[in-house]
Length: 423
Image 1 (cartoon, rainbow, N blue to C red):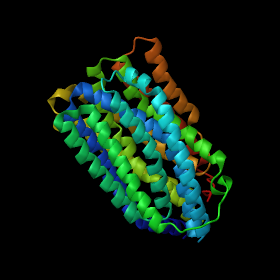
Image 2 (image 1 turned 180 degrees about the horizontal axis):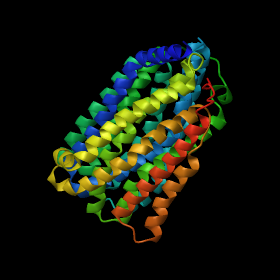
Image 3 (image 1 turned 90 degrees about the vertical axis):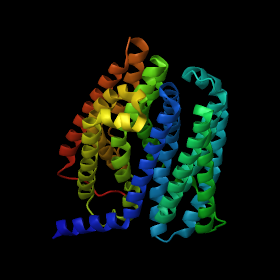
């Protein structure tokens, strides 16, 4: 009977968040559609530069996205308890902190813009400026969407994010199609992020309650929790996104472009199914912790992620040549090798990502040393040895197996007694 109750609670929860689940699936698909379109329009060399730029964008976004995971959880808790004053006070504080973050990113980015431009070997200095501005406004966008998610406004969240992605695809397509290359693509991304900020700002100003009260940062979220999330997620994204930048710096531009096309598709195994599952964890912590055993949630999440990731791996590895030719064109045919090997490597890592985010929701950070080791090994091997693209494939396979082995160890060790998820 208790087991039946837990399964019923799980079903009820995922049914109530079905819109968020399928909405994130559609948004994730649109992200990869943009990548494919850019690859077809730009050519091999420019696509390598574009991928390296987006690698920097994703790495820079992680410290903020880690904090907004805490924000989503806290807003969900206070909103469920009916503490509208706390939600409103948080909204006021979050905007002030975000403004500071925005200015810091712009100033630091401008200081290092010439260095970034020379490192990536780009002819367009303004594409780096667009990248920096996009990173700055993305801070606002992440905080706004996290607050909306915490308020359970899934309809507006999905509609807004889908609209932003469609606008981004259309604008980037037009700008690149008419000859602006990487500059046009980065400009389109920058403008789409700004549009998203405007939409969610107006939406939240309408939805969020007003208050004249202030609240201390400590009452909103634990600094320790935020630091743990930031370090863990930053280490993971460096491990999985640095390869674009490293390949651009240490390999021929053509090789970097070919690698980027294969790696981008292979990483959909991580970010599509797994990203959707772990996006629900903050809401779980805020809304469902007292109603179901967390070990059942973990089993359900791992099973769900494995099914989707395994099917995606079979598709990408089994038909790598056909998919690359169909999506990117014949000029990227050599990317099939990278797609095939990386997709197999990322399958066990996708389950590690679920396990890790579950641990983080419980306030534990188990995988940080492995992520740091994986990220640093890439830079060290390419910096001190005569490494090539095949070396990167071996590094990814090794770090995936090591992390997965440790995840299995944790799973067996904690399978008997798993504490309930903290609210």
